[in-house]
Length: 333
Ligand SMILES: Nc1ncnc2c1ncn2[C@@H]1O[C@H](COP(=O)(O)OP(=O)(O)O)[C@@H](O)[C@H]1O
Ligand SMILES: [Mg+2]
Image (cartoon, rainbow, N blue to C red; front, top):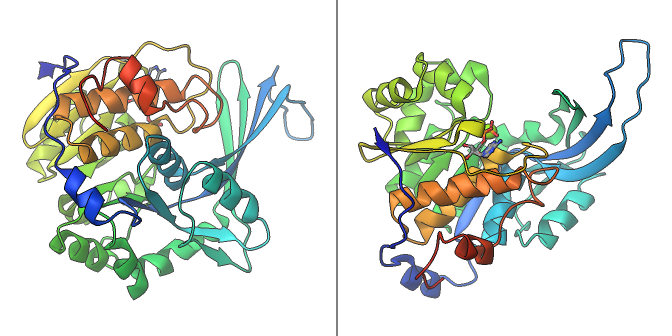
């Protein structure tokens, strides 16, 4: 295992021509779960059943892997569209917020019967609890299987899945995108039953990179410890892994190379969405032709800086900040 050094040199930027030829089309389409996050913090103690406690702060933000990764990419200047479902009655607030962040919302669908997915995050100084409702995200199964999704997704150079596609029913979509030469990444989040199912490996093998956090990687690999996890995933035929290790940094398996980085030091306020921000940083760096160690460093920095503010969006860095922190010196973006 190599200990990663931040490397300042860059590769040529092969995507410039691609961007010019396709200006206006999204470079990345993010398909997956969308939530409204209601973050209540500053409780002295959590109430027992039948009691009431008051939060000192309430923060409302768009959440879900698809929303957070898309907003991160947009902040870095990537043309990005999101594909997912919102509630018809309460989805406008999410559309407005995503649009304000620079995300193309034209392909979103609306559920007339269910509200937008909701997560209430309740935090004390010591820990957090989440109460969630899946809501309109139930439409994702249908969305992943409808022919127009493939036609739409083919427009982009990179497709990121922020959900857990069915290894049989959704294999056609992923297989077609792969055959069409598109780059595919996936962050299935904590869907334990998906991660412990053998067939899921077939789907992961079709993707260029898989982004699990440590617990998710333990479930799918059946191993513990960074090296053992990466080795096991490599043996299972997965070619790219961005392994997120929370406050311990991250590791990367990329074309049989293994890289490791410590966490970027930051005053952490809230870790919601750090993993989705890491994904955005990596996808951005790869699209811009940065080499693997630099891509890992950019992803690690995006994950770390996202934790300095509540929610998954406000703390995400700009390209200018990445440059100032020395990660993109010499690059023309
Ligand atoms: N406390 C922290 N300090 C610095 N970086 C962090 C911290 N927490 C998360 N990160 C960064 O964000 C990435 C994703 O966080 P992690 O908690 O592992 O993922 P997830 O949000 O998917 O559970 C980490 O790999 C790391 O780069
Ligand atoms: Mg995650």
